[in-house]
Image 1 (cartoon, rainbow, N blue to C red):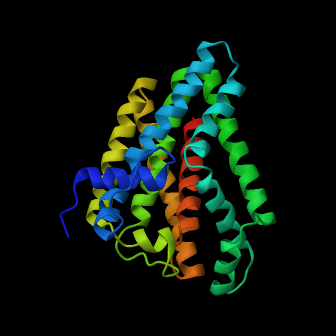
Image 2 (tube, rainbow, N blue to C red):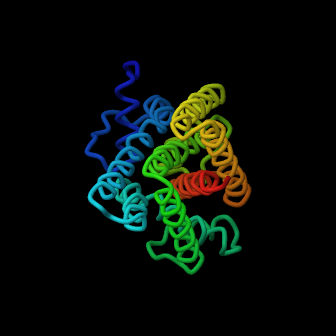
Length: 260
């Protein structure tokens, strides 16, 4: 098999983690490894699109609430709601208190149960509330939050795809990407994203660097807690779990940015 090129990894990241019209040219472990290392890059593009729409509405005279709703809606639209669906399914599986095989079966069903509905409601309310508060302060704070939270969400996926994290079942996206990223590479990507977030935070004043760096660290920390719980509960990760991790990290990052 030919060596994986950087373009293969980028296509894999955008083709699997976004709804942007990118064709995945290779679907194997090597491409998955490169793609999951590029996951924060896909988050960066999603975040820039969200910030762009929020900024455009603000320039056109829209209030902070409409800008907040639009900014929160863009990541959902650019993933076809897959991460939100994964969050809901993960909540249903965890909330069912069933053995692992039955919980996984519940997660595969097409409907959403009460745990999923409640989780989606509060997560989306939290995201809109934070963007509203930040846009009231300034457009720049809302824009930085959109970009940093989206990148942190995909960084959580890079870390969850590290070596040693098993898949919960043999098929699906979870099995395709589980354990593909060497731990050292995952930590390197985390360091790069955290540094870039700190750089973006410098635009917000003297405390901006510390706050944006902290939001990334705490975001992936919250996702790590959920990941470990899911591995204990389900025996590994699934595509739904990856979606739940992304939304958990994004929401945590936003809440941290709203504080202080």
